[in-house]
Length: 260
Ligand SMILES: [Zn+2]
Image (cartoon, rainbow, N blue to C red):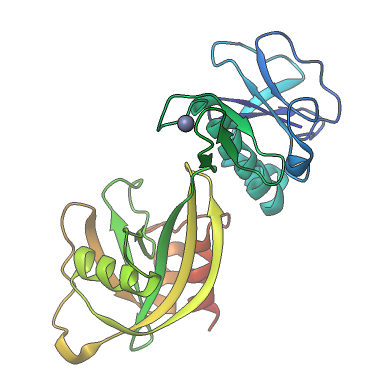
């Protein structure tokens, strides 16, 4: 089982992150085979931790969930991220949002139902598109005002109600940098547990028919540039820009451009 404290996860110094046996102190909120129905047993089991508990010792430490990718690899990062999303949902939504009744686990799937009105609830997921736009052998990279200094990435945004994924791609690119695109193609997807996204990746080409310049919106996007693969590599080698780490589908999209 995984053991969480807020946004951090417990690891043992001998490189253990998934504990087969763990005697939880009373401060821990336990979710395991004793408390979850059979239909949930394929999910990673986890213990959520009281946020006030100080459990750092010589042999154990809490690390940031993002750090899991560095220390334990991509698959463990994704699995632990999913477990934390589930843990947060179980802890933070115990009651029905319609009638206030208590929620109990479903025995046939991984949802929960209200004991009073029978309404079903499922762990929340927010779909977001992320897109690598190319134009004349150049890739569109942008700096988001909320990102760390000099970090450039491909553009992304949440899907809005009533949109399909292609419409979300078109809207986000128009809103954030004022461009239109064509030839939108599915690239791949990735759960992204910060806090509950599902990233759906695309490639697309600039529609030049009405294009003049990139127009960063100045709010979310403070800078946007077209760069060739060699320009990106030069800037990386000279520490002029950073790009997202390999845990992200953003990096996979950028690498796909650099490798082709
Ligand atoms: Zn209810």
